[in-house]
Image (cartoon, rainbow, N blue to C red; front, side, top):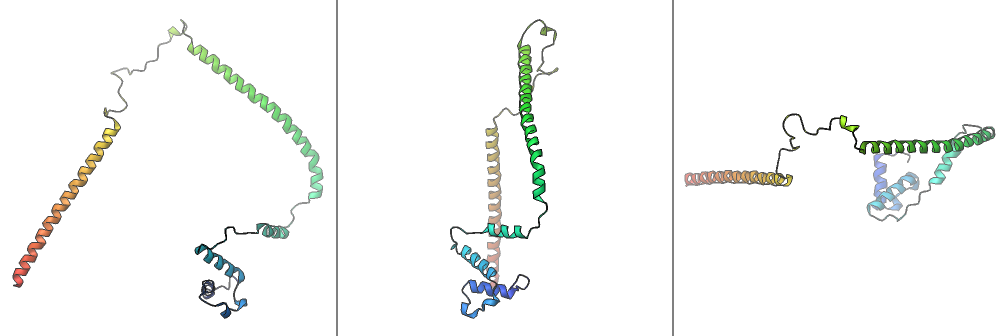
Length: 200
């Protein structure tokens, strides 16, 4: 039973066999694909929580089998001999380049630190040189500074008020529904009474 030939009837038969609905004596071994039977058996065991604690998968064998069938794309013998001298030259350049790169990064970091320290010292000094500059004004030109929020109450009070309003709306809706149902019940009772009087 290959995948192309596997019909719904075959799948149902294998499923019945795995679920012990069909006896093994009724089955011809050449009719059943062993891999399909193993998959159905594993699915059934998993559904009944009867699986083994560890499933052994031999991935290495399948990878080795695939690699045997894979074509060789390059000649390794000649290329390795040519690449070894070039690789040693490149590693020497990388080592020396990495050393200078580290020194350059340290020099840049040190110069940034010096500029920051000098800038803070110049900014922090108070003298007649800086008195020519107008002071920084944090107030607007007209009026006074306005608060960010116009609400003077804390946010929790607003939230509690909102919850109370919501509860009042719900209670009001329930009262209205109760009154409607009471009127409806009274109307139905009146109709029943009038109907019973007509019937008598």
